[in-house]
Image 1 (tube, rainbow over the protein chains, first blue to last red):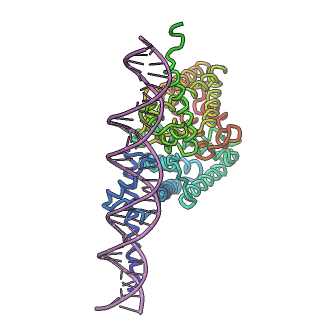
Image 2: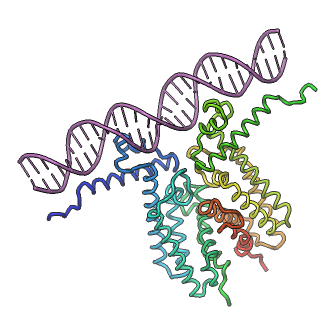
Image 3: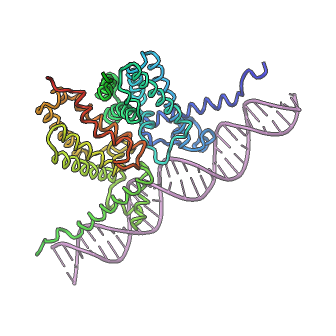
Length: 208
Length: 208
DNA sequence: TAGCTTTGGCTATAGGTCGTAGCTGAAGGA
DNA sequence: TCCTTCAGCTACGACCTATAGCCAAAGCTA
């Protein structure tokens, strides 16, 4: 077995990178998303601050890696939930609930993803890709709901999709801002999530 | 005329404080809300950084003064709009539109007020007071709408009020995050604002 | 096994931030 | 006219991001 281990060093390097991201996330939970200090992360890791730059070229790169990780997780949760439900409104509702549960369980990443709290940081296209995929997933489910007669065809128009996004963003945003430590079950705003599909349907009632 | 001028120095001091806030707001527009640097503000004002601490005891105090100013303006805009419309759903719609217009015109203050982008900063009770007043205003208008038969009585329950807040927060939040430079007229999400009262009414249709 | 290359650590340093301490001259009130 | 208050200043400490350059060890390759 010659190349059974695909680059022993690259593997260890990836482990360290993941460890850095975990510590950064933990730091952000207490110091605030924008308050992340790479120096403290380095010290907690047991190395001197400059050594951390061997793993990430800048502070923004750390944010971008976390942004990408968060978006991947979030997409996976929503996709799994939607896949386990009937297509259409039911899938939308399942994705909303799963997404809201994920955000409440990961409020720090949620802030990084849904607000833009870090001054100079703009997510890279690669890190943002899962968010685009999620948008396409939701579009497909709205189309499915239209085909099933659950929604008016206008729901699949840009304005309809924007409204759908605004609905879930609103409750999640309020939850993060006002009760960041609540669970999905106890949250004042997360309990509104199950009502959103019906609300959207009321905005786009099927013809006839 | 002995005390016609109420403390010449206090007046000048207040002018300087206001000037600092204006510069800080301008800085935040380019450097990001959390990226505000008191040093650059001081230099633009023509003084050395430590001298700025004669006017504000800390960076957080600057944020708090801006938070208070923003909330006062926002409340005034919403209150004026609501006062100029029929009570009930119409007043809610007018307040939503005025509020959305204000946020789009003042995106920096909006971010400070509706998200929590600055690590250690928590608004003081005094700065937050106008937001409480606005909540009471909206509650009163929902009650008026119920009395006029425009909404089901449940709309005035906590869950209903939370939903109402989530609706406007959602579109404004999406607008700020995705198109921060748009106007109210051109915004992809602000154009959804006029539809929100009807959407809320669909969630709480009056009995009978 | 021997040697070379890559790499992951280090120190030193530059330039930036917030915030405090303590001085001083001038403006304004008594 | 005197005296107090205050708004500026310099100097400083502690922290941050990020770069430059050194060095030893780990690991790949011949």
